[in-house]
Each structure stands twice: as structure tokens, then as C-alpha cells.
Length: 259
Ligand code: PGA
Image (cartoon, rainbow, N blue to C red; front, side, top):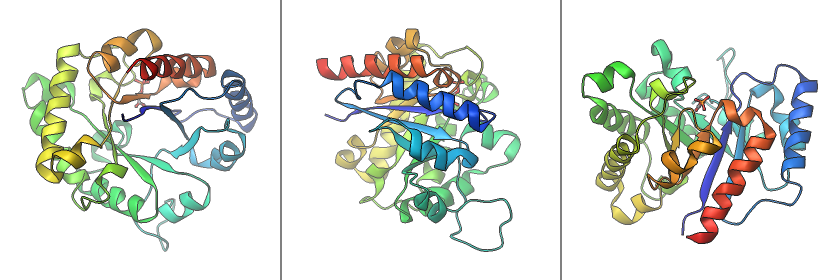
């Protein structure tokens, strides 16, 4: 049985090292009794606090970054390479988050380069895909998911495919308090699974976790994750509250125990 994944995305928070330390101490308190079986937990921190998080995260919680560049080193002012992240104890990295794709800052092709580079450095990419409200209104959401998935997985060989985690995050549900219906999530899941099967075959595709993200909170885990048979959640704003992180992870653990 695949584990559930809980990925917290702190975005551009916390805003000081003191606040980061308070957050970390809240998390350690929340997980004082350890992590439940069957749930893999990670937190994506801003670059500047990665080392602090590497030291301060509760035992068993993995460190993720929120982006990465595709080159290893060189004249790329402001960028951070996969090798640097690896060296900073990062094990997972968000790629193609909608807040980075927004207004064309990050293209489909770039997400593919980032996924390949992350894998080569031994990082686990979390490839975020999802349609805008306009694309859904136009009925093109399946094509968009297919396109983003194909581009993101372009350079991934079958033996590496199950190291990638896919996060379905409709853009209109991120940061908005609007979530898709169960039917909409199920449809997206089918499109994603079909595309993964076509690319990697059924056995490998089956091992690739597919998460839901966008306005997730504890009270919505049933609809957005369990009901839609997703492999976990990518949580933004609610992950800023250590107690909520611990609460959602506990719920995922209870569900995992009953599977
Ligand atoms: P949200 O963000 O939970 O605040 O909507 C989701 C995300 O950042 O992926």
C-alpha cells in the first residue's frame, strides 16, 4: 500500500528567523509522539531558512524546497541548484507551482528541465499541475493537465518515474477558499492516471503518488483526498499552523491504518 503524503508549502513565510524558530518548535510539539505509520510528511520552506529547518524539523519530517534551477552551477544570478539543495539536506522539491507558473514566469518546458535536474541530484520532484478558471470554463482542463504532465515528465525514464510525485492543483483553488467538487477531482485523477499509464505502463504508473492541493484544510480532507482516492495533499496556508499540520497528519494516519 502506498503511504499518504502530506506536503506543507509555507510559501513566502515565516518572515523572520525568530518566527521560523517558533514555527519549528510548534511542529516539534505537534509531533511530540512521533509520526503515524503510513504517512510521509514534508515541509517546503523558503530557501533562506532551509538550513534552519533542516536542524529544527521534528524527526521523520522531510525537508522540501519550493523551487530549483536546472543547471548545476555557474552564472545564474539568484538561482539555486539541485546540488545545493541536496547539500542543504533537502530531499523533495516543488516544481511548477502555480504561483511560479503564473503570468508565464515558468514555462512547461522549464518544469521538465527542473524535474530531470532534481532527479539527477537525488531529489524527489513534486510536479504541480492544474488548470486556470478560464481553461476550465473553456472545457480544456484535461488537455491542460495532459500538456503540463507530458512536459514535466518529458525527460523522466521509467525507472525514475515513481520518484516523482504529482500534485493536482487547480489554479483557481489555490489561495481562494474554493475547492473543486469530488467529481472534478476524480475526473482530474483519471486524466492524470491515464497519461501516466500511457507514458510509463500500468505498473509504474500505479506507484506514482498523485496528491490534491488548493485550499485544503482538515475539514476538507474527506472530500479532496479520501473521497477522490488521492494519495495525499499539498497544503499551503493551513500548513502555517503547526497544530493544523499535526491534526491533518493524524487524520491521514488514521485513514492509512484503516486501509
Ligand atoms: P493553499 O495553497 O492551500 O493556500 O490554497 C496551496 C499551495 O500552495 O499549493
